[in-house]
Length: 173
Image 1 (spheres, rainbow, N blue to C red):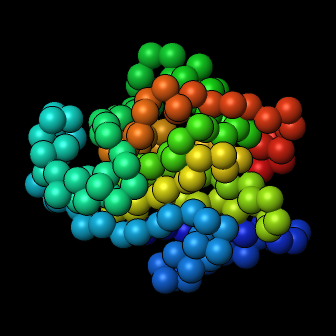
Image 2 (cartoon, helix red, strand yellow):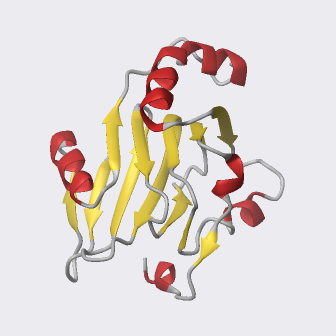
């Protein structure tokens, strides 16, 4: 279940009630839903089998938002060059298309920097669907276990390249 930290003072406000998380994120134009997870999908399940298991959910979201491609990303702590890969995402950036993640296992932390509100950190875990709209300034960290498995949806994978901001905002969080 998602946890939201709002950096509105010296001590961040923590929100764990899922309705309150969804409501706050909606106010800053971030999509959030809870989807049921399929317990029978173990760590050895293929990407094709995972996508097949969530076919109806992915199809509905794709139809609503124009996503044309879905894949599965599985990041493990033992991956070669993991730190170099993660370094692409831990600086403030934005994309030319939505960043859509449905978390299946592990956890990730998305920091969002909205233009007129405080920075927030959204910790997402299994069952959380997060939609960061195109043009939204954000950055990403793995949790301490350094593991996440997620379905990603794209309108056009070329639009997913990060555009880095000239600030060092992410360093403060």
